[in-house]
Length: 161
Image 1 (cartoon, helix red, strand yellow):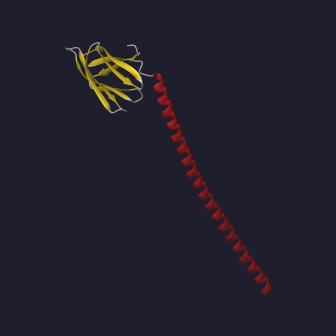
Image 2 (cartoon, one colour):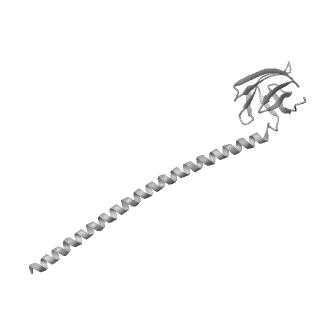
Image 3 (cartoon, one colour):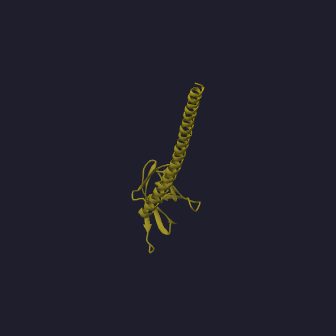
């Protein structure tokens, strides 16, 4: 009977060892799978961020090229005193500093962003301000004046004018 009990005890220990071994294999494979999923998620997030950045850069470049191709604003610049408008893809800021309605004059300022240059002029109704930007010659004309507003038109000058 002693051998029967030894065999039974041996089977019991083997079974327990097998269960513990299966548990360890399950735990380590589960842990490895969890780490693998976490690493994949981090890698995917990084790839998505890079793709988003690439697409944003491409969109900004397309917007810039479209704005340059369009040239100057097609609509008149209607400004209130103290108001500014950014044109030419952010290369020029036009500001209406002041309107003197009784004298029929407008004080206009041009801020050339890339050159870091300011031009301020007091223009009468119908008066114009000439400047060059991007290899082209332009004229800013005061078309109409209100109490505190002015309508300005931007015209491209031809070389013979």
